[in-house]
Length: 140
Image (tube, rainbow, N blue to C red):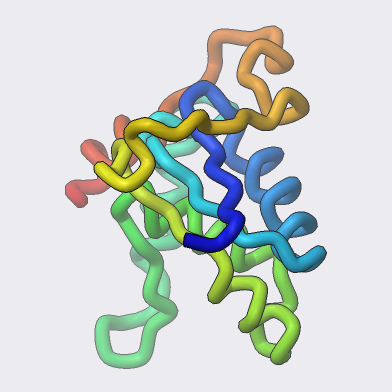
């Protein structure tokens, strides 16, 4: 296995985590994110659900845009939005990213890093929900 950085998304804010991961990917690092369903989305639960539901309802099933409902796919899509994914540099960066729900057996004995600047304790509010809760409401 290559030198892969393992990040535990438990208790981390989705947008802040995605921006840090995107910049690290562009610097050439290989990253695996575990426990994607425990990443948090800041804001009121009703507002967050409504905004994600609007994203899902856009377009049609034939022509898209296709928006994910699974927590690992939502996190990966959020990182993709912060990369130049239509250029070779962004495609290479996305190829170095892996996102998992839970902790896979291959990472169970390894120590996972965290991103302190993305910690949920920085919010100062109780208005947030996890990607797992969002997934349950979206019907994924």
